[in-house]
Length: 86
Length: 265
Image (cartoon, rainbow over all chains, first blue to last red; front, side):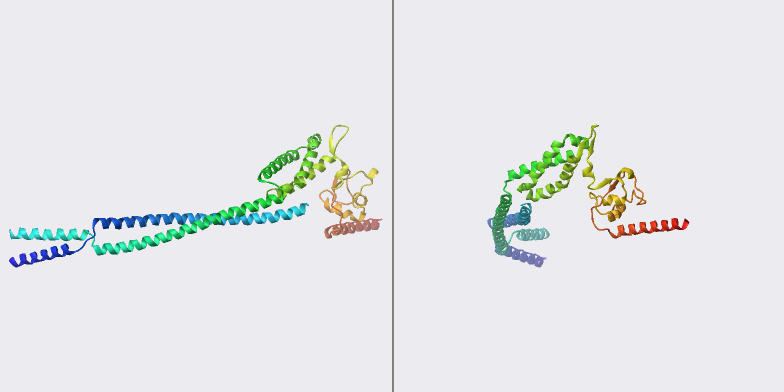
């Protein structure tokens, strides 16, 4: 019985020693990590919004290209018709 | 007593090790910080690149707007107008179309009464057509498409005459361009041969099969036409195969009849 008690005591001492000697992150450091994670999340959100904005702009530009092409074709047609009318 | 002490010690050990597990070890914190910092830096760089791309796209879009405006202005310059001028012409075309449709629905009597309006419409059409703005696609096909309707209306109105009885009729001079009303044999000597021979029709009697084929719904036998029939007169041209076939069939039948009549005598 005494031997059992002694071994448990030893084990407890070992645990106290291990726990006591390990270095843990401080509250501020944990907060710093959390802030970093929040900033990353915020950046991801911003990137998603910017990607949407970029896609919308690309679509707008391609529509304008099409409009420009139509206008150039219209200009040629108008020139031809004016020659016919004269 | 000893057992109680043992239980207590075990409890303390488990609690301490449990609490220790919940806390983050410094090395783990350092590793996590490194990972998240790298991720943040990567995202910041990506955001910067995106912002630059967006700025470039905005500039490109503004350039396109300028090009569009420039081309539009060039088109307007070609036809000597402005956006306001286009609006004004659009209103004129719409008003013209409304009047044209209204007059086209009228009977000959009503048209005769409103012949001044038709004349004005015709003149307005000439003005619309000679306006440079007609060259714009928005108007070109539409305005040019009015031509046949306007000319038709104008020709009809010009051909309308009022009889002594007050009845409005289409003058024959116009009708005979496309049709011919059969007169009597006694007075007009009208038969397909003679009709085709008239200078106002074909001036060539051999073209009679054209009238025959064009009026098959009425003419069953080319030798028999009745006064009052309005015959369609196709435009003058050489006989088609069908017309030649019809003429040959007629001559064959006629020869057979004559032979039969001669044999019987």
